Every structure is written in C-alpha cells, then in structure tokens.
Length: 159
Image (cartoon, rainbow, N blue to C red; front, side):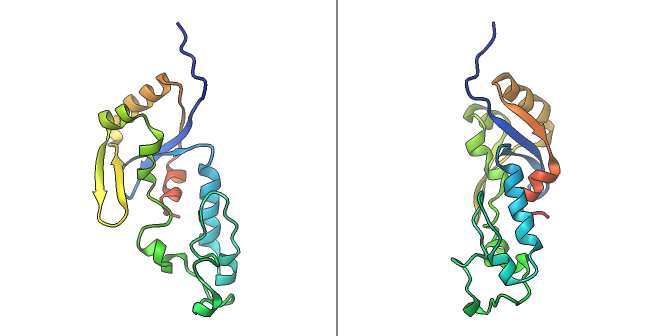
C-alpha cells in the first residue's frame, strides 16, 4: 500500500554547533535566509547595512531600528556583532527553536527535549545520535530531507 502525501515538506537539517544538537529549517526558505544573514554580515558601513534587502528576515540594522542621527551615519563602520539584537541573541532567531513548528509533535516528544533559555525562549534539543532514526521516521511520513551543517549554522548566526 502506498501512502499519499499531498504536501511534501522539504527540510534541511544539520548539527547546530551552539546547542550541540540537530536543528531543522524549511528548505524552501533556508538558502534565502542564509544569504540575507551573510549580506548583512558583509556590510562594511551603516549605509550598506541599512540598505540590505530582506525578504525572509527583518533587517536589525534597517531604518526602522537605527537612524543616522543615532550615531549610525551612513559612512560609519558597521559590525553586525555590535547590534543589540545580535548581542542579545534575538537575531537571527535560534535555529534549534524552529523544530517546534516543523516537526510532528510526537516526533518532537520522542526524539527531543524542550529547553528554556533565560532570554530567547525555548528550543528543542535533538541529540545527534538520534539522527538516523528521526530522519527515517520523517521520510516515512513523506518529508524530503537533506543535511547541510554549514547552512544550519549560518541560520543560527554563525558566519
């Protein structure tokens, strides 16, 4: 008997270094999000950073958050690691948190453990030794998966 899966979910996953566990992202958006993170990280001045176009994420250096009058003149050197939202861990959002919206609840409970952080909310810790069994269970349910550790870590703010 063949199981029909009307909507195939495409996921990318990998080893998230920050929490030393598996993390998952929507494969349809992951590369675009990573490109936006890299583009902002590559900005050399506040003017460049302010003008990085975002379609998947919000720009924490954008005009809605920092103005030239705020000691952020267009020609002033820019360092993504000096942004309050990056320092506080709010941008980009934790890649390990995404599993709550991407993985079936029963598999979250079976393979992962919910952890609370003091400032950034909950994340799902999925030990790397569960990879084979979890990936097989997801594929049985019609998910398409690919592993890309580098992409997962860029999504987590590691450039």
